[in-house]
Structure formats: structure tokens, C-alpha cells
Image 1 (cartoon, one colour):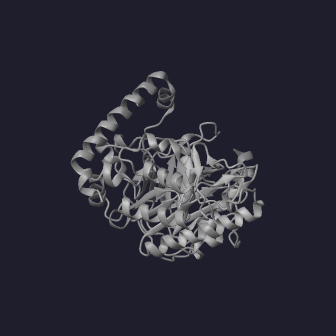
Image 2 (cartoon, rainbow, N blue to C red):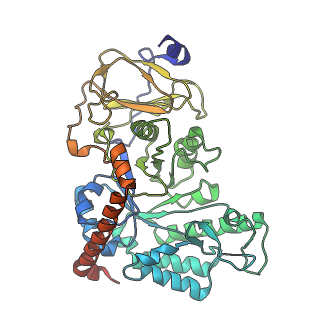
Image 3 (cartoon, one colour):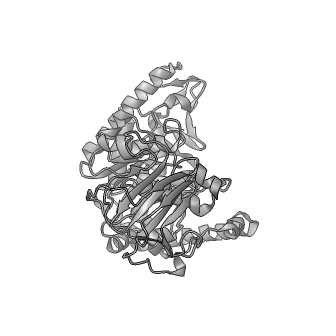
Length: 461
């Protein structure tokens, strides 16, 4: 322990004065679910627990009752329709029950709107993800208005979520891209400049069509993209493609740069992907992402990552209401610094306090006696045991939520246990787990058709 103390950051909390700046944001933490799978009525209650949901746009047909259910359960909640500015996911034709995606695919083929390389081959940005040439204004107009009219974006949704908003289309194909459709490969700089200009035009047109809707992107912090949107998702945080891929790189954008560029209300999601190969355990990975998110005013999401954004994991920390923020985050490792760097961070709330150790060494915290207590939970009892705390050693890449002594503890409920543990993860990879998933998919299709028969027709345009 003495060695750890020497390595740690010895900080005395009792003598520090914290700015009591009451901000407008309340009711932390905010929780988002980036849920791209299809679901049925049995999952309504689970999904309605989240403050923000990113969902497939054809929900307006195959799960029409969910909208009224979600609004009743969570009046301040936000529903964002998931789509792409310039990508077509080819396997989608196999789960396109009423032809909406086939209509898009046929239009792209009919007008030959594909982005191609110098050999005339369609370019892919991701496995099974074919790219459409965004520089074509006819495609931009078709795609934007098809989304608006077909999926009732003005009537049903709080906004739209654009995935794969990239800045370097030249990286899609190493043999060269024909951005101007003249049959020759263009210079990477020319490809990227044309792509960025077209993407900025797409986002500006989206804002013109939906002046009062939320517009969120995933993929890039390029300045020319920011003026027409409300914010972005930091996928697989710390986002590997954000600058150098470090914690500080993503946090600078989240806490400082983007809020000055985006429209109000600004909107951010920190999405952490569970990494089973990480030395940090499941709950520590979640805590580090959640507490990092709580340094700002965004929404936190934790799932299996790009391979499967379709989890409803629920954690003890999700049951907490920290109340109002009482000030901006402070880097205890460098209190006077203006830049955002990895260190030991703190943010205070009316109901508790959040600490994040983004450094590479343990952080020793000493707190005023009798003021704070740990959460009382089921999942990680060594961390969340409900006991009073006046000191703790916070591991690198970890975080913790502490409650003020006068704050009511969240009510314990066994059904809030996370749905993932090692045996469950092994079961899902087993042959029997595969069979069960296939059976569930078949059942879900039957339920989708049933819901469409009763509810879908009334929403058709």
C-alpha cells in the first residue's frame, strides 16, 4: 500500500473550495441506448428506461405503439431515427419487410448514384456497406425527402441520427476513387474536399428541412460539419479515430470545442464498447465511461460495440439520481490548467460527487469525514457497498459515483441486475445459444407481422 500511495496522487479534498455554479442541467446521469436491432412488445418496458434512444426508422410501422408508450413513460425522452447520408447496407434487403429499403436500392441503381473506383466498381466503406456518391445533388435530395416522408420524421421523431459521417472518403478504396464520375481516379485531396463540401451541404439541407429537430452525427468533428447540427456520438469511447484516440482527445471535443460550435441544445453520446480482452473488468469499463460522461452534460451508452449495438444492460449506477450539477469539472491533478489532459477529475452534484481517474497511476482520494457514502448495489459489492467513505484509492482508467450522506439510496431491485456475466456470455457463444437466438428471430418476425397487421396500415403514407 505504501508503494501505491507513493505512486498515487495524494490529494486532500477537505481544504479545496469548489465553485457553486448552478447549471441548467438536472437529473444525472443521462442514459442513451444505441439500439439498432429489431424488438417486440415484450421489450417496451426495458427500452423505455433510457432517456435517449437511437432506433431504426421503420419503427413507425412495425412497432407503431411503442411511440405512445415511450412518450407516456418518459415525457422528456428523445427518439432519434437512425440512417446514413451516403451508405446502403446491402443485407438490409433481407429484413426489409415492406420494401422501404428496396425502394432506396432500386433508385440508386436506376440513377447510378453509386460511388465508384477507377475500374467502375462500387466502393465499400465497411463490410456490406456500399457507398453512394454524396456529391450528386439528386441523391441528396432523394435520400433526405424519402427519410422525411416515408418515416414520419416531423411527426414521430425528436430528430435524426446520421451514421458514417466521414471526412476522408479517399480511405474507402486504396486503388483510387472516381469522385466526379469521369472514369479516372482522382487525387485523394480532391476526393476528400468534394466529399466534405457535399456532407456539409447535406447537413445544412437537413437543418433547413427540420429547423426544430435534433440532428446528431457519428463519425467526425470536422468544423464545417458542426454549424448545422446539435452534436455527435463518440463511438467506442475513447474514440479511436478522434485525433490520437486518447481519452483527452475525445474529452476535449466533448467538453470544450464542440459545444462552442454546435447548435443549442447541444447533444452528445459517449458510447463505450465492452472489451472482453481488457484487463479492466466489465463494471470498471462501464464506470470509467459513465463517470467520464458525467464530467459533461451528455448521455452515456454501454454495449457490445460496432458488432452488436443491441444490448439492454442495466447497472446499479443507472438507478442513481445525482440531481443538479454544482459546477464544472475540475482536474485535481492540474487545478489551474486550461487544457483537458488525463488526470484525476472531479465534478460535484447536489446529490453526490463523481471522480474519474484517466491517468496511468492510482489516485489517492481523501474526503471530509461523514459527508459521502458509496452506492448500495448488487453487481460490484466491493465498490458499491453502501458504506460511508472518507478515503479511497481509485485505480487507473476507473471512476466512481459517491452520494452525499443526506441523499436517499436507490431502491435495490434484483431485476436491475445486468444481463451479462461470464456464464451468460459463454452461453451466447454456444451452439444452443445460437439455436435460441434463431428461434427468437423467427418469433420476432411473427410479432412484427402481427403488429403491422393491426397498427402499420394506419401509419402508411
